Image 1 (tube, rainbow, N blue to C red):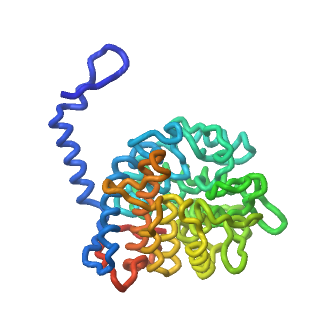
Image 2 (cartoon, one colour):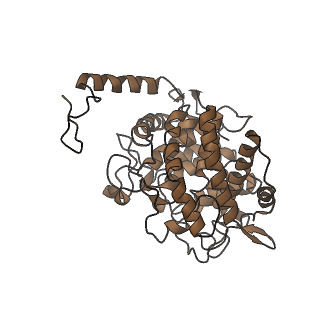
Image 3 (cartoon, helix red, strand yellow):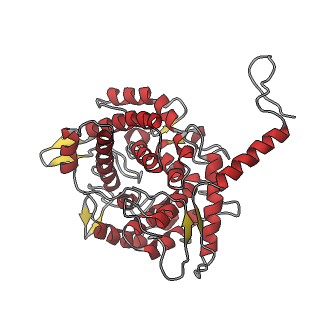
Length: 417
């Protein structure tokens, strides 16, 4: 039998059906899930780490399908346990769900688009109240889209371009005109805020204080021009212009001006710093400057050779005990896009406390506080898909895996932007 709990004393809906019917629907769903989309096989690789990576890949597909494919962004611990008072962190939605499109399951990403539509009024009100145009998405929130009180979330901005990234991933995966029209509104409103947020100075446009970068340890009142956010801002506005052109609308001259004159990321000793102001780079938490070319596709702001030197420096100097589960896939994506497949594999399989995957596939962080951490699982799948399928219109075969020691068979992946 099945039991339903609902307000009132009326008879429960019979929609749940019998136990047998529920079991059959579940079996049918999982069969459809595993027989569509992408697949990768590493079993013939000589590298002894290959089977462990394959295990993580399979289990992460299961865990993200269960926990991260709903109609609103998930908690970082999904449906398993409560974290951060049950709120979801919108900057983490990319790590939870972006991979679905690249793995040929775009419907599991597009489900959550309706949530962005449902809170766009709140996002517009937030932007207007702060003196900006467009829609500013919250950081830590619940289903209603209201920002939770925090000294970080109000200043965080790297969640803003996510919906543009989702739209571009879904476009590459193939979508119908109805969803394209809905996404067009979200892209336009997001880019309008991003353009409004960029501050004009005599030397160009800047992401100025108060701002909190992805590496959430800097003073927002003195921080400016974080490297990752600058690159993401450029790519988001550039992609929004492409969406305007695809819909038959003209490019906006103001956005093109910002693309041409957006501040370049700061460098010191030939490598990118995390932010453009002192202390420039702390070597704990997220090495977020590596997302500027890796997570973010190629832009006019980031030089691949400089990014690769930054990757080597981070590998040598970072305090890996303080990194988080999604940082290791972030490194792998940066290594892949800068032509270092050995570093990509090493990043995914680095021996670090927060890069541990238990027998059930859980990627725990901070002991029992976060016994499962789904941005690690989703990030792993994003990185692997980039490593297998490559990016752009000239995607290559398995650019993120070394030729020596690895035999990579894959199918069904959609190249990244």
